[in-house]
Amino acid sequence: MAGNTIGKNFTLTSFGESHGVAIGGIVDGCPPNLKISAEDLQKDLDRRRPGSSRYTTARREDDKVEILSGVFEGRTTGTPIALLIHNTDARSQDYSDIKDNYRPSHADFVYDKKYGFRDYRGGGRASARETAIRVAAGAIAKKWLYERYKTQVRGYLSKLGDISIGKQFDWEEVNNNPFFSPDSSIIPTFEQKINQLKKDGDSIGATLTIVAENMPCGLGEPVFDRLDADIAKAMMSINAVKGVEIGKGMASSEDLGSQHRDIMTPDGFLSNNAGGILGGISNGQDIIVHIALKPTSSISQEVETINKKREKTTIKVKGRHDPCVGIRATPIAEAMLALTLMDHALRNRAQNYDLA
Image 1 (tube, rainbow, N blue to C red):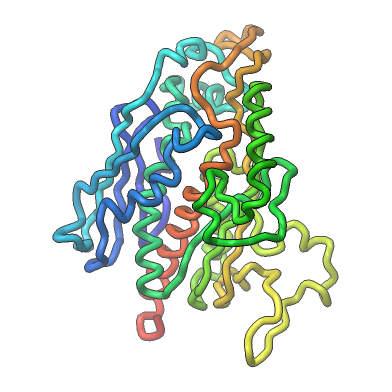
Image 2: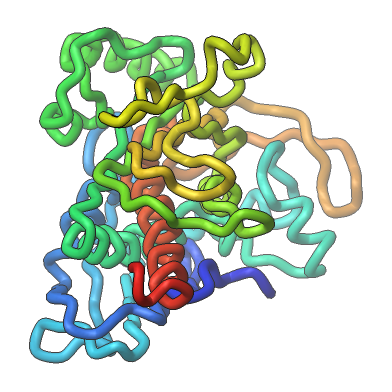
């Protein structure tokens, strides 16, 4: 299976399946002498881990990360960093019914058609379980970006279904509630919505916003490796993501040119409709990314489907699933943005050494 590596100068190669012994990754290209520890990575993993609240999947994984190589006496050595997270709470028996039956809106059907064989336990390689290692790797990128540029990558849930957050915005509130919401006043509404969905055996989508503050100017390449293009690719690689917007995004199509252009002054830009990227290159403003995640496809309601013989049948998915995958996706999206930014920062430093 190809396509398990992201990045050029700073790369992550991930491995493992949802119900395998472990998931892991190899981070390559990290500069030496960065202070890093398993505890630094664990902070973000704890934000993402399953079973962390009653509004997410009941699967309970400690997600304790081990650093196997690339770090000596608390500092990176410049060699590949091997990361490992053991799976400890897999219930493979929950998936015996889907061995020959395809779950709608899942990768079951296409995996069988492409590879002729698949690990059906918990979705195997297609499971969002794999994203835990991205969060661990992303924590390395976050720390490097902050230490070198004071760039801070943070995200929040901006919309649950059609329920948007209000005007009360507080970054400190994001990690004080299970929804990653910056608006504490909306939490009771979110709770009511999720509780009803759990009773109905249904799920819902979400919109997340990820922001990179204190950005250096000049990251990105102007043609095929545009920074916004690589960000979009990184975000679309996250399970359930169906849409990516940079800055004003799709709403830009409704603007007049006189409204949309970000006017420049000696004191800086007067707006940020471009989302911090011009011509595929960062302009020093905050990078603002919005992503849309579809509703969880695994729900307890019975549904029509087909089996391997293309015979019509029905299926009722068992197992433990999130009523909204967007709730736990904030640390994942932060990680993917950080990985992309660090990769481009190192590429820029290599290309423009005397300027970077």
